[in-house]
Length: 452
Image (tube, rainbow, N blue to C red; front, side):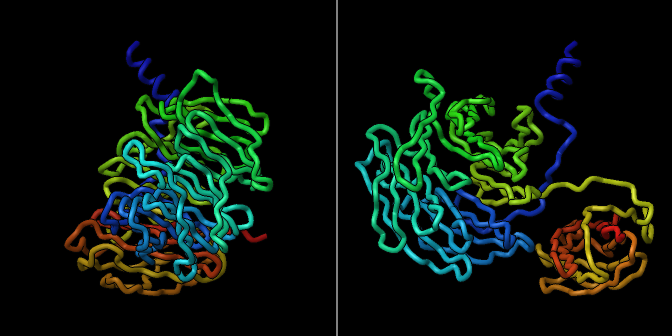
């Protein structure tokens, strides 16, 4: 009976066998604990901020540090892109909000938050969130000043939209349709009309239920708002009907947590689980996967726009990128062995056109890795030593499915043999890191759409 109970419990709450995401890359460069991460999916960028105010822009495809934005002097609490995507706002415990040009990475302006008297170890001017108004000409700011402001980016004039004498403003977002500024204060979620600046509604589970709201997130494509309570509960509200529709107990541990949802609205990520984060099927209240790999508390995370990637940030000063696994299928066109080694299919891409460009390099420690490259049974590169500089190849594809095999001739001084690869078919670039050793050769399945 005990065995049956354990299995039943596992099937109900955790899908033990489905692990849809795997660690693809770690970004190391912060000198302090990471406090916030954000995706800019349209140009494959990850932006991360830390406890000392440093912001780093990372290239998601090759792992390079593209830019360091060093102007804040306190913890980064929020990073938000403008609606048109041309600017980024950063909020910091130094009491300021800064606006950055995302093409030139130039600082466009610095805006002071209002302040109240110090309390509970806070100075009283620290912003907890920043959000762009629908026209990108105004930002909304709230935090430990017990106040929500609108700030005109040109004139820098501030207008108070909400103020109380008891609770800090812990979180805030603009609704996907741009109609509402929504923020958490104590156990209540408030809605302000972005057009009139007037309070229009508030959501509260009950007057007796004081589970203070720490974070909120809108579920894509649905009139649903999720709110994380300090007690580890997630509340789901239909904000059109002002109705609580569901609750989920994410953890028994009290504390704050970030919230993130995939673009298809099926998956949710929660924290407050030490070095781990939980990936949920939130509608079924079941855990899909536990994302680990960090060595300290994971405090921030985000989905890419297409839902194929997750980025996590931790107090271990590391940013991790997770990618969705490809389903394994049998393909008789790909050999099972090459030169006495097993062929390990590690990725699958759909490609268009008759030719592809292949770039290969060593994106880790340069340790003497030597490889050969095989396309559809033909060796197009023999015994090439990997270095930081990219080696570019072109290959002509056949009409049916194709494959690329990378054969490692050694393990280098730091096993295994790791190879960064970019596949460019002229319309899209895909980047992956492959791993080969003396027992297996890495392979990519290249699928071509069926022609009528």
